[in-house]
Length: 240
Image 1 (cartoon, helix red, strand yellow):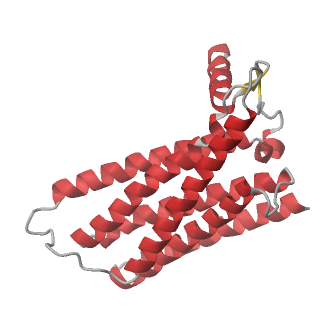
Image 2 (image 1 turned 90 degrees about the vertical axis):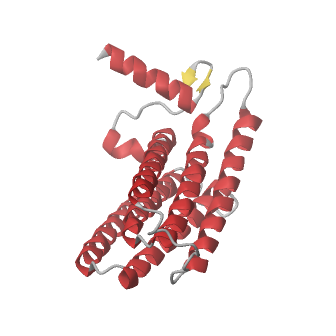
């Protein structure tokens, strides 16, 4: 237990930063009640999630590339419905993630001094999300080039869980009384949440027309409904 506790403490000390050798975001005593107050823990979870899905996207594209013969690959790209919308949303998403990363770096650099170490949780999560989004854009291109629209299911899960991560960050900002339009972190969080939701809806709409798996789509729609409902209930509880 002591070894595990030391590893956890060292991880938080490295990722959250310290002031006078004290962790900036200490581990909450009451996990069920104070978890949303621990922005470092939330951002650490988001960073791990984005890195995990980055590996999933890379492996998916590698496996599909090995299974696709030269004869199956199209010489010219056939644009599917919603092609332009997906590219616009993806490019806007990259820009917002870049702004969020820059905001985190500036916040960290302007507050760091002899008594405070660097706080990686401020900019590592959006940086990981930006790299994962690049691989998601590449997968979108490969889906159209290979005509393998079932691979969009991987993107659906990524966009859904990314949206849930931004909702958790938004709930944390609300609990910390930072839900104001003058706070850049709040603005980028809201915009990211909207973009992730729009990308999820666009991919679902795309699958509805391109993949003959209506039963699966109904299941995914039900899962999305459950996730959104749970998040709305938690936000209402925080606002009480």
